[in-house]
Length: 403
Image (cartoon, rainbow, N blue to C red; front, side):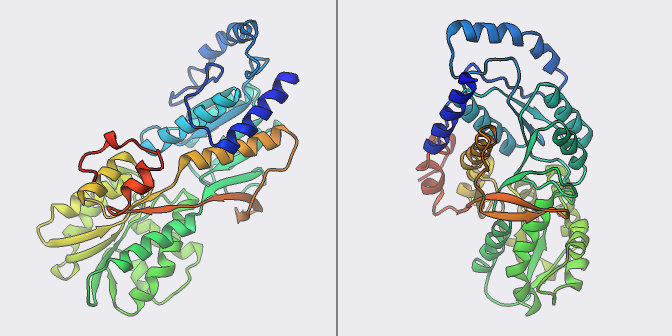
């Protein structure tokens, strides 16, 4: 008990100072796609625990149990590997045992991962859902086991089993993307606007699009912008506010599924179908960095596209380089150090028997989930160094052409 209390106190101090160093040896992690190798890890857990005790490691857990379980959607996108690194660093430095598992785009694997973590004896589950509604069954199993559930970055819908939600301000992300296109649009009217969105299974995709639509719609309604690739959006151009069902219809036409190849194929199909009046100087609402790069590559090779402005988000290293090189117009920096630290602060409060700090709520179709939001930063060629290098999120050596 004394060791656990000390671990909690160390974590509180760590979160307050935003430590981001390397994880300690007391952290139990994995970057495997599924939970298949967890059993092998368990075989050595008792020995590792004994070694820790013998070494007098007061920051570690006194038992072989895992205190905090983390489930992330995929390790095929750099964004989630960055999140994994932050969790391992912060929890490891705090002396908490943790297990990180990836679902690799499968809700079935995600559920298996959660079941594995339940068997590890976790007290808190931090989960970024692959599918907002399908994840309900997994978190309900965790809740039935007495585990506190923290939805991470993506809200899990249709269940009472979500205790807290930690997220970036998703609506503001969409607003920032839309406003960037408005502020950097060419002069005149009838400017072609290509819309793309995330996965229909991701609640955030709806919020991102809603935010973008809130600022783009007046420009669409007055003819400044003309939607080039969605008949559903065109039919709703006079509607300032869209219902979830209406947004769903638009996303159904322009979804990238957060997949590079899907985004590339969609962009190719849209440009092939577009007439000359839908080319020239164009605007592109890119939902995130990975898909934005794929879409940008397609638009860059169309000889009838004179210029394009395209948005993104996540500040992935490849897209930061694209921004520096002028291949992607902007990205949204969402500091995963802060998001992970907020999640750990919530977990620490729960383990201390306290109520975590929140500043808003998000409705998940069943309940208003207490949430903690993190601010975002728009990154362009003009402020790459200030936003990402000076903040020590990246090292300048990772990029070329940086001034």
